[in-house]
Amino acid sequence: MGNWVALVTTQKSATGIDLSVDLLTSLVERGLIEAERVEQIATLKSGSSQRLGKLLVDTGLLNMDALYRFYSDYYEFALWDGEGEPTLDERLPESFLSYNRILPVRREEQLTLAIEDPEDDGLLDMLRRLLPDARIELAPPQKLSQPLNALLGAGDQESNRNELSVDDISHLKDLALEAPIIRQVNDLIGEGVDMGASDIHLEPAKSRIDLRYRIDGVLITRAAPSLENYPAIVSRIKILASLDIAERRLPQDGRIRLRTGGREVDIRVSTLPTNHGEDVVMRILDQKSQALSLDATGLSERIVDTYRENLSRSSGLILVTGPTGSGKSTTLYSGLNAIIDGTRKIITVEDPVEYEISGITQIQVNEGAGLTFAGVLRSILRHDPDVIFIGEIRDRETAEIAVQASLTGHLVLSTIHTNSATGAIGRFLDMGVADYLLASSLIAVSAQRLVRKLCEHCKVPGVPDLGAVERFGLPPDALVFHPKGCQKCSRTGYRGRLPIGEMLELTPEFRHQILHNPAADNLDQFAHGMNFTTMLHDGIARVLQGETTLEEIVRVAG
Image (cartoon, rainbow, N blue to C red):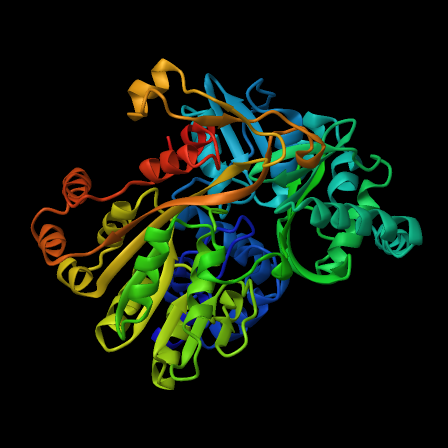
């Protein structure tokens, strides 16, 4: 069984949540699926956005009745017997019931929710929060459709909203290839690039479309395309990203590479079904806009010097932590760029590869095909690397391999999602990494966030108020600057972003603390005793240098 477990461990549901390997394991153990079929199933699943159960039924590997009997046993939900009076509940909008295929029925005083898809963990969690007293039961599509349509009075309406006929698909393709739609899509992407946006959001509402650009970490609304043209615009984006334009009920992810304004940009595309259509987010990865050098990151000189010093080491684990969009990848890429000298073999494992760098070997993770972080790491250790960059440590297996690699003569760099430098230590311990291994391997942890920079053309000097002086320990005569707004910064008072951060180097004394008292409060206290400069203090220093505002520091760092 171990041969095929790796093929399915990282298969993802449509919601982006990893499918439990237990689901397929149980099907095999109960004799419902032959073990010899697992590799075939994994291949089929890698090219499909369908739920595992639906895929098995559609391919004839499992019949519907057997699937739902299995669901009932596996998820411990009873099968709906068809009894009860279908009823609407004010807590569940009709559009929500229609989209998610949920039939509320009342038997005496007990509300029962008959659902079609128990593989949707997010939906189950939502229902448990909204209606904690409701009973959840399972119903196959053929049993649910008629009473649900009757309750909603939808008939063909629901089908028309979520399913496209062959003629609909052909028409959308034609529209998506017409000059006006091509021009609209090119214009909204081009505007985002010109404005320096990191993300483009297209959000359908009941009677309008909202277009918003994330600039310097803040969403700004712009004139949106018409509601009439929106399906064709989404189809155009899907075609560019090699997505299925006929699929509107499930999330999809893709990638676009194009030239705009004389430069090449990579765009990550994500679609998400909503009550009023598909929500689209495009993340712009503009390689030309980013100078990949440590000095150009904007980090304080103290952090850059410490980071550069640790990059010269031959082994150990270096982590950069922070929330999504905090510049972690840019910092690590800049570090890699700084050590490319032809004397060390550098291999990266990423999902996705955000920036292509000459002189290093970069590997794109493909979880659908079984090419996982952990699997790739095991392989690349046999390729004699000196430096290994892991795009993100997400699970225990990857964490353990990273630690082991750093202990066997490799310099390992990676990111992890925590709020602080010391928080990364607790995260590793929570994932099950042995404290003595972590204490031996970890050499430095950097945490960072991005704050908006004051516009150099319109910022105005001032003095901090008394509350700020007392709260942040500022000199009473400190000079600080405030945003005003001008044409250069689109009247926001800010233009661009800069990182604030903290760098924790592990001393022998700190390693001792990890082994003997790794509680978060203790590690924080001990770090402060080491003259550790926190992210907040780094931010305040940037305020006193006239680069940003106290309001920004409080907003981002607390």
